[in-house]
Length: 175
Image (cartoon, rainbow, N blue to C red):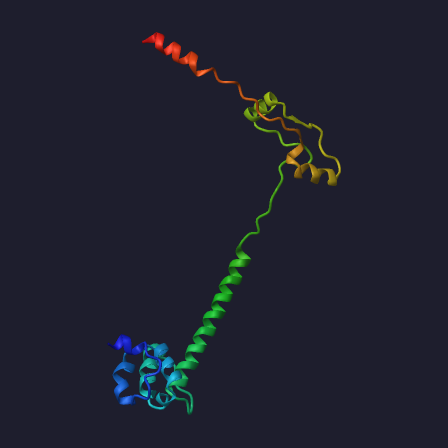
């Protein structure tokens, strides 16, 4: 029953004494929402805010002429500001500590040699590489951009599979 009562925003002018059992169980956010929609409750809920202040902000003291509700809101704002500041400090220290990844080229002035197995396959298929290094920076950048100096790429030619009819004749003879 109390759960459904806390879902209410506007009880329609119900007296405070009838709402008090429901408001006693309300969280500070729910209490604040009820007060927002029912301004007549603000004057009477000071004792409820006292309980919330004692529960969450034990070490804090009230300022002069400050209600418990105002103290709760002030302490909540201070906590959020402190949390944002700590989060910003942690993020800043993590950004400083992260090394920036850099890409290093092993072969700047020459063409990269492929592994032996790949070189054999490329030679078999007719892929030719330029063995001369790129001399100026523009040609070096162009060479790096164009697959490391590959001049010609030939499509693979597959051997034709034997017809299936011969295989069946061979297997029939084995039976």
